[in-house]
Amino acid sequence: MDRMRAVRLHLPTRTLSVEEVAKPVPGPGEVLVKVAAAGVCLSDVHLVDGTLTPLYLEAESVTLGHEVAGTVEALGPGAGGWSAGQRVVLQAGERRGSRTHTRGVDYDGGWAEYALASAATLVALPLTLPLDQAAIIPDAVSTPWAAVTVTGDVRPAQAVGVWGAGGLGAHAVQLLRAVGAYPVIAVDPAPAARDRALHFGADLALDSGDPLLHEQVLGATGGGGLEAAFDFAGAPAVREQALSVLAPKGRLVLVGLSDQPLTVAHSTRFSYLQHRILGHYGSEEHHVAQLVRLAEGGRLDFSRSITDVLPLEEAATAVRRMETKEGDPVRLILRP
Image (cartoon, rainbow, N blue to C red; front, side, top):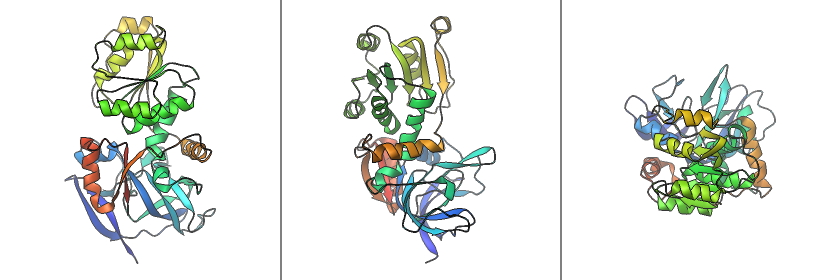
C-alpha cells in the first residue's frame, strides 16, 4: 500500500483536513515509523488559528504532530541500529545545519498513519511504557523538564511557583516534586486546573485573582518568597505577579509563548533584589531519553496525562477541545 491518511494543514487558508497522501519512503539515514499515538498540543492549535507560522516550511501544507510514538516499519540505507517492530518515540525536531526544524511544523509530522524520521531522532522505548504516554514526552514533558532542570536550575528544598497548570504546567508540577522542590505552589484562575495541580503533586494551589495571593505565597515560604517561578501561561499579568513574589536573587523562567512586550513595572525593585528573567524554549535530545528512563524506573507516572484518545478523523475536534479546554484536557491523543 503506497498511500496513507494524514491530517494536513493548508497554511494560506489555515484549513485542516484528512487527506490521502503518498506513504513516505525512507531515504539514507531515515526510518519509517508506523504511528501508534500522536499528541495534540496548544502549539498545534496556534498553527491552525494562525498565531504561529512555520519558519522553514518549504511547502504550503504540512502534516501536523510533533509528539509521536510508534513502531519501526522500514529502514533506509545507513539507518542501522534499529529493527522492524521496535517501539520508539520521536524527538520533536532535529538540527539541520545551524537551524532547529520542528516536526509537524517545518516538516511533516505524526498526525498520520506513518511518519518519516532521521534515525538519530528516535529513542527506544521499554515494553512497560504505553505508547500513548510515551508520545507526549517530547514537548509536553521534556519542555518543562528542561525548564526546571537546566534553565531554572531548581535544587532540592527550593520554593517554586508554577503559573498555568495546563498540559506543560501540570507536568512541571510533577517534575518539580520529583527533583525535590518544596513547596511547589501552582497558580491558575481555573478551579479545575488548580485541582489538577494538586493531583499532580502541588503543595498549594492558588487562584491568580485572589487579592491575598502575595500573603499566601509568603506564608507558605516562611516569608522568603519563591526562589524560582515558571510562567507557562505566556501572559504579561502572570509575569508581573510572579515577579512580585520572588525571593531576593530569584529567577522567573518564561516558558509560555506570547507576542506581548516584556516589561518590568518596578525596575528599581527588580535591580535591588537582583531578580533574573530567563527565556526558555523546548528541550535537548538527551532530555527525552532521560524521561523515558525515569518512567521505566517508576520515578515518573504519565498515566494521568492522557485525557482522551481520538481517531485521526477527529483531529479538528481535538484541536477545538484543546482550544476551548472542553473536558479540561491535559493531553489528547490521536490514534490512526
